[in-house]
Length: 188
Image (cartoon, rainbow, N blue to C red; front, side):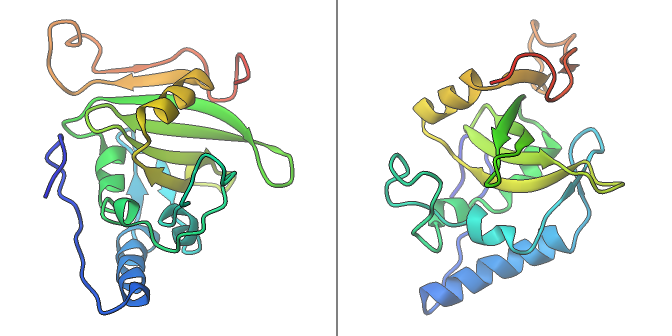
């Protein structure tokens, strides 16, 4: 089974939800935590082992959950686990990068970079990393509904457009970084 982009879903079977979660966690650790991952421009992205618990869980009602996930394993998120690398490579897809500043749990501003794969409305959220040699840390990845995708776009600034599909209007703009650096300019 695949999406508009032709990206295959990672469909696993297990005897229990705990076993299924462990199987997806093993993929995450092997293919992301223990691997060296970079985006299309060579910017390094760090994947932490504990991030799996938030990135691949969900909320039964995301509108009222305020970021709290009560579903231990979100199958729609987990089945798209291998899409993260594809989104970061931006190979054969068009991507918009949105910069945002969000407050963390200690009320400190965190600068985020949201990669949106236009063809399948897939979002990968990264935050700036202060470790030398690492540009970003992975936060989460998911397929938002149209309303939430609109909110991401309204509350952030377009930082970069990467166009890999060859169309007359896009031929000269294969990758267009914005003149604003992440975190500069107007606050979302």
